Image (cartoon, rainbow, N blue to C red; front, side):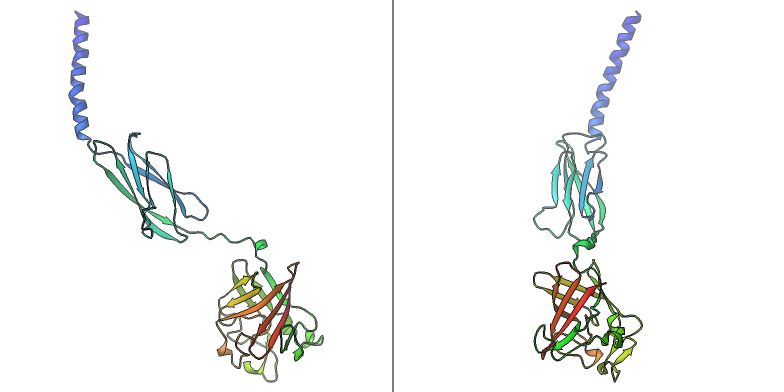
Length: 290
């Protein structure tokens, strides 16, 4: 009698479980527990990975991942996966994107969720050893370190003497600083050599005059193949402030926004020969690494 009762009890549980299972299937016509994880996969901050999940997981679910890059027109930022992480490389800029993941399974309604993902683009600083000009430079402490003439490498009109190393010491201690990050500075100290066009007549040492006083923000580009250095920023210069690609300045306010020099770097990287055609002659400068 006890065995029969036990069998009836088990049968009753099975019968009760059948309608419960059907009800569960009807109640969950929509995929539940959709989520996804976002990960940054490179040092630049631009490569992003998305791993979609559901709770519980189902290997039959197909996830569509839209990385939300509105700049593309061919849907190259949209991927389909059944579970493994998908990756996408965003443009090289800092920006916030809306990532959308949609889960699809036969017989169930699609489900979508979104998350905001901010790309913080990190520009890796170049290795100083890979930037030939990086460092501090000064006029060579020797005769003819700067001069002017009718042709390139011709200083027959005028060049500094050995005595000028003392007379113009405030010029020869000026520093030209090339940053590994493309920045440039004229570090002139408290005095530099001033000329009549800067308000000092006769020319002599004096306080730097704007904009040639390192008060601006300057950058440079070095084209090793073309053999040129371009300084960007009003007031940036090498050698002498008055020499530029159009003329010799007659007023500080006429300083150009950029200057390009012909440049030849020595094999050991410690000597820099510069020439600039100012229209009616050439200035030449010899710089050495400090």
